[in-house]
Amino acid sequence: MTSSVAQLLLLVVGLLTIFTSPANAHALFPRQAPAAGYLAAAFLGNVPSVFFHVAAPDSPSTFQRLNGGQPSLVPTQGTKGARDPFIFFSQDRSKLYVLATDLDIGKTNWNAAQTNGSRSIFIWESSDGLNWSQDRLVELMPATAGYVWAPSAIWDVDREAYAVFWSSRVYDAADASHTGTPQGPFIYYSHTNDFTSFTAPARWEPETTITNIDQEIQYLGGTTYIRYISDTSVTKVVLDRSDTGLFGPWTRVGTPVDKVREGPASYQDILRPERYYLWEDDYQTSGAGYECYYTETFEIPYTPCETPLSPRGMRHGGVVQVDAEIYSALLRNVTS
Image (cartoon, rainbow, N blue to C red; front, side):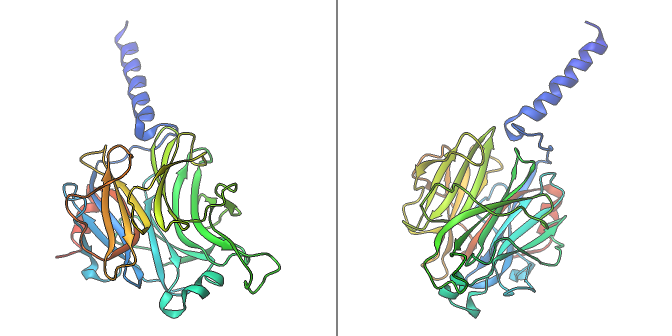
């Protein structure tokens, strides 16, 4: 074998390794810089704005406040209140996005928020995690919907677009005042490539009659996904698994934490990649917020984190791994 042919074979093997590794299976995902820390987005108590926190790789449940403990993203449109922030990277990792519910419960009540609430979500974007765009308000559901809550997004490898999920209750088209009995809440989805224009909404699993909110999806490689959902029929977070892609069918695994909780958030450990964390919101206890659990097998029940989550009070949000450049910049904005 000539040296040039050998070099060519080595190059081909190298490329195959990049694009068929578990992190890149089923799609040509771009390689990413090694993770150097965690960035969490959450809201606090009933303060309807987005707060950021960071944590080091060796302290995955001990976070530090950014921006002097003040909100980093304060909405200026709609209800001027943002809850349930979901943070994620674009597919090429050039941008960070935050999606959030358009709701300030201090200006309304839960009945009104569910019957004639906002049908839009907030969207922010950033290239460095510190400097963010103005909020953008995008309507996702028609007038038959009572609300749009808890948006999240993930790259749909089959559509080569982002799938955006949320929950809604829907009324009959003739019931313009929404005084009748709605269907749901069920989880809906839409696709987008730019987070400006979206396809028409559709039901995720239209055959189900189980009422669900607060979806959190974790990609495990290949065609395997797990998801956490707040099942409103039991007021607990449940775990499902699909080995056939993002749209299932999904198989119920069980209840990771046998407590009344909602708003799941999940992320992978940087130093121990076999470990995944699950945060669940103790919304019934004043000031409690998220609790931290983990698994290495996705078998139930999950184990409480060795170090309790701090600071206390973070509520329904999300966590991403960030590289050294972003992490270093964020650390300069930390509040001790």
